[in-house]
Length: 495
Image 1: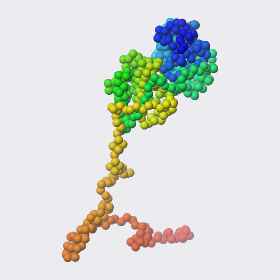
Image 2 (image 1 turned 90 degrees about the vertical axis):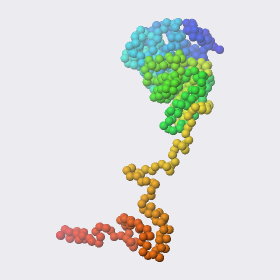
Image 3 (image 1 turned 180 degrees about the horizontal axis):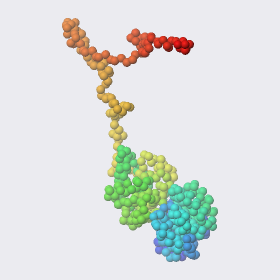
Image 4 (image 1 turned 135 degrees about the vertical axis):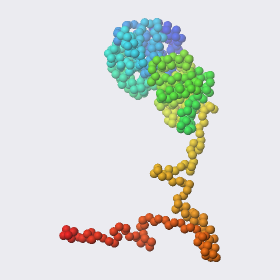
């Protein structure tokens, strides 16, 4: 097994690694550090939780230990897709460079430009930034990228998902072509392959695991959710989540609960807090101070449940996460790998449970196709809401009221129309009429009293035939024709 001491790192960096408690590099670190120290471009592909961040921070610190930064011209650049990931990379530099005199600056949103400008003006060895804020500083004339010697793109496929590819290409064009470039990600989409072929020169490809694979230390499961009434689908799903959490018991020390939409994150966090669970939301619409405070509380154990959007799915290193709950099935299969990769890190055991409804079957199939294995189905907890039978949910068709198309006049279905009721009444009175006719032979004067009243004659509509079956005469001029119609044209002109 390779040791860190065999990787030709700076002795001061090795001392920091030893103080951090690490002795042996992970496979991605052992494969990426030597070519990076040799000055070659590196394309690193490995599943989450395998130490990709140290794969570029350790060689960068070693290479930057010699030299001095100039004002507004950083010597190295690390691009990250989210503020949280950028802050985490900065923490890694602080950990491994504490015995080396290197300066750094963190350019992320939610922090004033004035504070960041002051750091850049002094000159920094390491610049860690999100693409949007970096370009903001450049366009304001506060930053030059012509002195960048090493450039790192972390979580490259997340950059693609978030629409940063045009910004990445522009940033590449602002850096010198002699730079060293390091790409790291858990997945590698075709668009990312195109960029690597364009901007990397003969990169050393380090792929320590099949793309988009989950750690074997993570126990996975899918709870098939069958909603009852549509108006209670959301509340039933939240009740199922609480039942899954309760069933895990003490084993669920803390958990990240992922939702697809920011509005669902807020609603679920509020619902959990109302039910007595220690939960807080985190997503891109919250201010940076709130996001930092929430993450710090989750890291130190004062917050048990972190309800998050995919802003927390990439790169966040919180080693002791025991459970991951996918309240919503991710629409992209790669996001599932990144989500569950927040647990089971550094060889620890973890558990990931996903709630899947009837509409999620396609997404579950895509995930299983990506993982090349079936995710086990788990039994629903006893406290989970039971779906209502379809027969009870729908009323019988014969009891549904009928509506007329006119909208104003409605016909009662319980009583037949007058002209349909008359024959029925006559049929019921038929025996009485026969009895009355028998009595009429003995008492002619009682005939009129015993006979039923004749119904009123029905109004005849305009007929097309007369009583003999002949075509009815046209109503109008009839047989009379005005004389002027019979006149010829000459007679009309002469008259």
